[in-house]
Length: 113
Length: 354
Image (tube, rainbow over all chains, first blue to last red; front, side, top):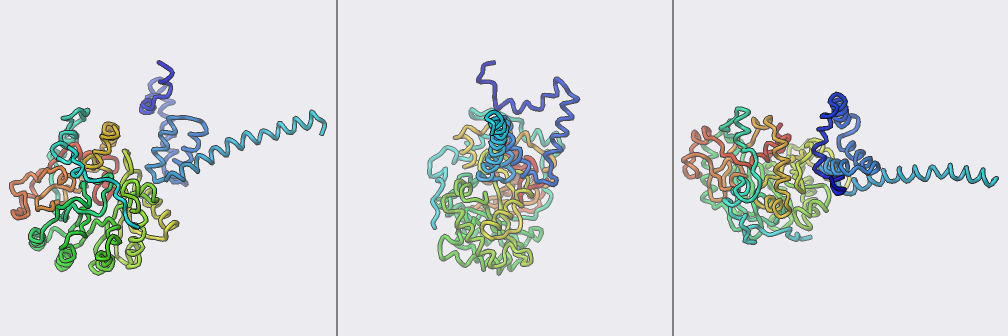
């Protein structure tokens, strides 16, 4: 396998094959996964937008492909999808910046403020 | 605002896909494309082959291929350059059939833009006199396209016509990409005019249903979820209302086939259709409850077979030799394009089946 094959879009179709090496856990995962994405207190469309945002945060190209498709199929427009990604990015950026409080605390302690 | 045409008809472009025989060669795998399991084989496995007719309930008439729009995915290859129009003589034969065969409770008028047939008004009035339910597949923008069509909203209301209109999306960007610049804005104005007549308002009894079809090589999502989102967004952004949303799958014929082939997405799309094949849709397939009449009076199992020039498998294939018994006992003509109606929750002129 060459590096260019690390993220082959066709591999997404093989996701279900993970049960080949560990059937019991794989089956339990898919049962749970399918339950998560059913209509519930949140609509399927809302879940797809959350998944799209998380897919970007965890930087999973398979998940980005899958949940871009799912978001479009469930009726999201381009603006909604980009807003969802911004929410993910804001939390990720905010989480980084929140750690700056630790940096500030440490700095103030070191410099005797 | 006027409409900027999205594309031209395959016919005017001189495309080889304008020939239904060539389209059949493509979808049956006789060109360079990969071949797929025959639709008939899948039907046989679920005990539905040959596919029979259940009832003759809907009499669908294509009043002509002339249209004020040239949508990118049009399965009719309609447009302003098309000249095929049903004559009054053929319409009179259709009326006679409707009069003699009460099982046809519904007349489904389509095109092109059916309103552009010069005999449209007279024909709707005549069908109303027969007491038939009338459905008109209106592209909405026709209402604003010319002052001579401004009468339509009130006329539809007067005859309790059910209006079924394509609106691919609740935003201008995605709608105009598929149907032409300016279509969304005019469609919204037309819906406002229909709403003013009472269309789409729950208490009026006047039905305005919208049709969603995907803007690319993918299958539609859940119909009720799409309907809820369309209602929310159209009410929020434009304060307009409608009754139901029908989610329809694009069939790989005419301009959508051209779209798939030119973007090298044909195989990808066919694989999606086959993967989503759902035998649970077979009982409700629209071809089992209707006949579809072309502008020149020939009979087909559905609108899509009509576009592929696949006439009914009967000895009487024209309205001038209409034979109810033969049509009731016919086997429906099938092809690989039928996978479009059996994918997922299924697809018909009324949206989801299963």
